[in-house]
Amino acid sequence: MTDNELKQIKLFALEELSKSFSQPTMTLWFDPMRVVAVDGSCVTISLPAGRKSFVSEQYYPILKQVFSNIIGFETDLKIISDEEEAELIEEFGEKIDSAYDTRFNPAYTFENFVVGETNKLAHSASLAVAKHPAQLNNPLFLYGPSGLGKTHLLFAIVNDIRASHPDSKILYVTGEEFTIDLIESLAKKTTMAFRDKYRTVDVLLVDDIQFIAGKMAVQEEFFHTFDTLFKMNKQIILASDCAPKDIDNLEDRLKSRFVMGLVADIQPPDFELRMAIFKRKALDFNLDLDMKILYFLADNITTNVRQIEGALKKLKAHSLITGEKCDYNMAKEELTDFFANAKSEESIIEKIFAFAEKRYGVKVDEMKSARRNAEIIAARHYAIYLIRKTTKLSQKSIAKLFNKKDHTTVINSISFIERKMQNEPAFEREIENVINELHS
Ligand code: ADP
Ligand code: MG
Image (cartoon, rainbow, N blue to C red; front, side, top):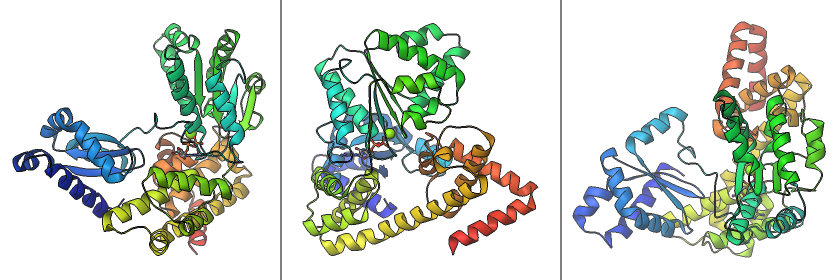
């Protein structure tokens, strides 16, 4: 959202609040607030440090309600101090979606997962596991490209089992978290506690399991975790960006275990599913869209459900701020840039991957995997550097594109390439040429 839009949202909030609070209260506690960021699951506001805790204690529920009403759907609220805001901005160089952890989301349920041809197997398998943990489909292995609902389904399973079996011990981690946890426990000599944590659960979900590939000790530990749970008839659920057989550098004994239960893929949504998701999300967003707009949207957004949400949020923000109803012309005008940017960035990224593939003889999947052989690492650095220099993608989005959770990978790649350019003039010229070509 632009600064103006954020300011506008603040004005709406002040107007709402002024219906319930006196002028002095408004002046003292609410006027100094700044709306820092709004995304699909969270509004972040900042306040002067001295006021943050009082406002958080006294007014959190009403603020959350007010922002939810303005945005048009239930949203989380995060209150930070102006100092924290400054730190955040400095730390990340960009305040976009770094102010909150969007990881766990109780709003991801089966009820709001839209089912179509391309995801119905993954959906029905997940539902079966949630209804009958450890009886069918163990392990359940979901895979598919980013942004198509794997994490949504994992959380839906968690939420469902929590509701029906409140006593069962459920543990959700990402492959990266499992790795970090293990490394810390090795360093601190607390492996017993680590094992206790992972080997005594009823349901273990590991998202982005591909992360453990290529890491000997981690795979070893995961193998024993898996076997222990499996023998005790506990449910295991895994998600990955590709099928077990395609995860490079994953031990064979893990590959064979991952396919012992049910393996289900998710493919990019077909036209019908895109329409259905748009309809459903428009309802959730409290947006009234006619068929023509829905067709227009489903025609233009083809690869990724996350983008669908992005487009709707943009429309919602616009009609909120202008007070206009969203009609076809408005949608077209508002989203043309959105599509154009998405398209041209997509095509630039495709070209970059093609360049990197050709130069290093490494496939895109390998660049996006956790594999660490020298050629792959070099190709990954090269692609990341070029994407950062030629698109508007944030470091965090680029990290995501490469299935990395945090942006340090991106920073490392950039400094690696910059160093290489300094040391090798020929390489520097090559990079300049590529960038020129990409821009033309
Ligand atoms: P992945 O883990 O596969 O990268 P996510 O589960 O994070 O993808 O999904 C990205 C976003 O798209 C989430 O906000 C999710 O709720 C939404 N989404 C994906 N598929 C669907 C679907 N079939 N119905 C509703 N929302 C979906
Ligand atoms: Mg995910």
